[in-house]
Length: 129
Image (cartoon, rainbow, N blue to C red; front, side, top):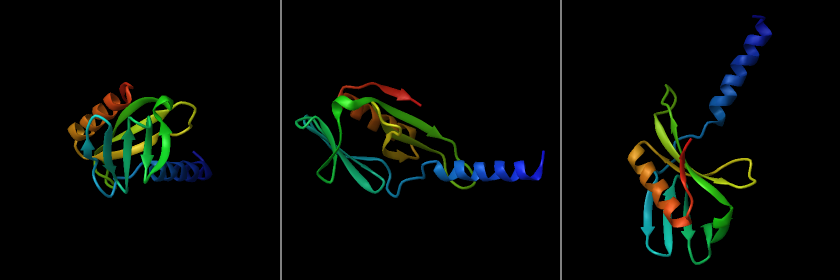
C-alpha cells in the first residue's frame, strides 16, 4: 500500500477516535423521578424530562419536544488503552442528523435503568445501538 494511503488511513483512524464520545465528567445519575419530572445528570449537564411541558429541557431551555423523540438508544463502547469501557444513553430525534446525548456510565445496569426511565417517561421505546 502506498505511503500516502497509509498516512490517510492513520489520520482517519485518529479522527474516528476523536469523534467517539468521551466518558462524561460525572456518571449518569437520576436526580429526580416523579409523575411529572425526570431529571438526569449526565456529564456536565442536567436534562429535565417534563411531562407538563411535553419537552426535554436543559437549564430551563427546551432541547426537544417529546413528540420529536423517536427512541431512546443505549450503546456499548468497548474499552481501549485510551478510554475505559462504558455505556451511553442518547435520544434519537426525528429529522436530526445526530442523537442527543443524555450521558454515559461504566455500569451497564445504570445506563439501562436510566434509558428505561426515560422511555417510560416520554412514551418511546428503548433500542440497543
